[in-house]
Length: 299
Ligand SMILES: CC(C)(COP(=O)(O)OP(=O)(O)OC[C@H]1O[C@@H](n2cnc3c(N)ncnc32)[C@H](O)[C@@H]1OP(=O)(O)O)[C@@H](O)C(=O)NCCC(=O)NCCS
Image (tube, rainbow, N blue to C red; front, side):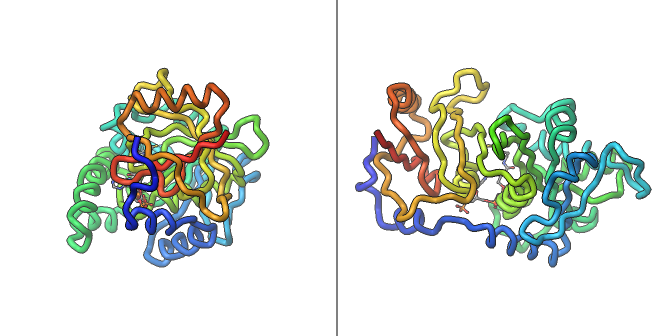
């Protein structure tokens, strides 16, 4: 275990760069609209009527996948292309979204928040030399498959380049999130934030891996309590269960009591034992620092 007080100042300053606010999500969504991206909620009428379709004042277009559609492309093909985005992004983890899950647990009880580009702009993004080498590699690992599926289908509509979905739980305003994916770095946080606002979610339960850089996205959304430090049932090693209080942060920001090894399974089991013994354990910002997760334990 590495104690928090052994961290260098750089890590501490970085951890203080949070929290993210609703206004940050709104500003970044407006920037995306100005830059030619599309923002959509895809579900059906009776669910869409319950959602905030202009979260934080950002206009999000809606699509009813059960209704007649008079555009030259179909919503079924849009969602098939999204499915390939998701399957490709999650492919390395081996947990691609099944088509029936997308329908039964996403489109019917909830709504997908999609960020899109025109086919031409999406194709240009694959060869955009203005992005960093790392971002270019991430784009090249996902977007060509998405464009390939659109071509295979003869689909000419907006190309999904990021998306998110959460489903309602019996907990009032409590949602269970899954399926965050992005083909172009810079979109994931905005997709998740807009969706949470559209759902009017106040708590969000989800699973993630301690070693996943996506933890940095998840931790931006507020106080993150561990419900389980070890989820043996999950097919990916190092998976935990968390619950976020959306846009709620501790003030002043607490100091970590521990820097958890992201790959240290023994330390994860030890954390689980302490949870079982009644400890309250939070993941602190920024979620992941190199190979460590800042942890706050309360008794
Ligand atoms: C997770 C994911 C959606 C992030 O998308 P994104 O567009 O890069 O997200 P953003 O640009 O808004 O946020 C980036 C933040 O996440 C971190 N991050 C997330 N995924 C990352 C990756 N693959 N590589 C590097 N950094 C990543 C960055 O460090 C950054 O953190 P910072 O702002 O504190 O520096 C994307 O990487 C993805 O699709 N991953 C595969 C699917 C997946 O694992 N989903 C999450 C399931 S729990």
